[in-house]
Length: 358
Image 1 (cartoon, one colour):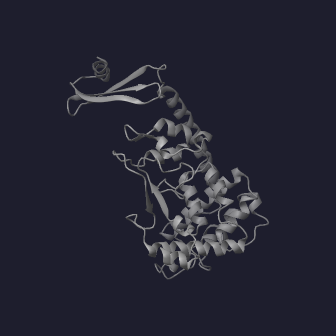
Image 2: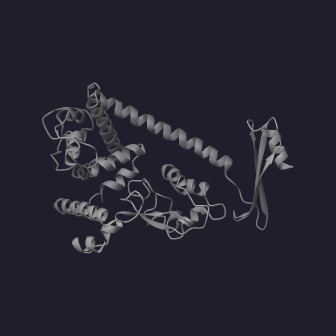
Image 3: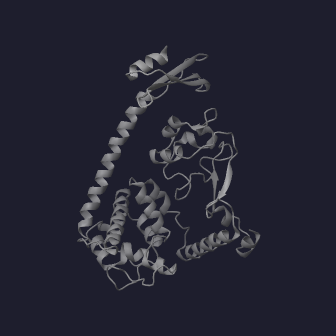
C-alpha cells in the first residue's frame, strides 16, 4: 500500500476508490456519506432521498432486536429501486461490527497489486479531466441517476461513460480478439463513441431522432465528453430519449454481431418512444398500487404507555399443520416479545387465524 501511494503522490483517494462497507450492525456507516450498497455503480444511492434521511446511520434502518431491515421505513425514505436493493443486503443474526472490504478482490482482501491498478486507472482519468477542463462525471452523473428510465439503462449509461462496454476496441486492448473494426460499417475502429454515436449507420438513427442533436454537435474524443456537451443542451425528457436510444442501438449492434439480421435502424426512433412511454405508464401503475398497499398495511402504533399485539397464521397443507406467529410492540415500535408455534391441521386460513387469536 505504501509503495502504491508513494508512486502516485501519496494520495489516499486511490485506496478509497476501491473500498466498500460491509454492513454489520450499521452503527459505523453513514447512509449518505459512505459507500455501502453492494453491486451498485457507485455503491451509493442512485436516486434523490428524503430530507429526513440526511445524517442517518445505517443502524437506524435495522431492527436491532430481530436483525432485519426496517422495510416500511426504507420504502418511505428512499426510492423504490434503491429500497429494494437495500432490503436484499444480508444481515448477520449476531451483533457484529461493520467492516471494510476491498472491491477489487473476490475475497474482499486488500492487495497492493489491485490497488496499483486502481490508482493507474484514476490517474489516467485525471489526465483526461485536465484536458477537458472539468471533473469526470460531475455534470453527467446527477442527471443520469435522476432520469425516469430503467435501472439497467442507467447502468448501461454508466458503463458507456466509463468506457467499459465490451466494444471491439476494448476487447482488442485486453487481447481477447484481434479485429477492432466496427462490425456494421467495417471501416472504423469500434470504440464506445463510434458504436453509439459516430458510426455512419448510427448517424442515420440520430438524424431522425432528437432535433437538437442534428446540428452543432461535432466529434468528441470519448463518450464522456459527448455527454458533458449534451447535458447542457438537452432537457430531461430528451436525455431519457437519448439513453433509451443508445441502449436500443447497442442491442441492435449485439444482435448483428452474433448472427442476427440488421433491422432498418431508423425504426429504432419509433421503438424508443414506445419503450419509454410503456415504462412510464408501468411506473405510474406500480406507484399507485404501492401507495394503496402501504396505506392498507402500514402498522399504526398504540397510544402512549400501551402495547399492541399483532398475530398471523398460515396453512402448510403438505405437512398437514398450521403455523402461528405473534409480536407485541410498544408505542415507539420497539419489540417487547415475539413468538411462533406449530398449530393443528385446519382447512382454511380463517380457522388458523381464529386459533392464533385464541
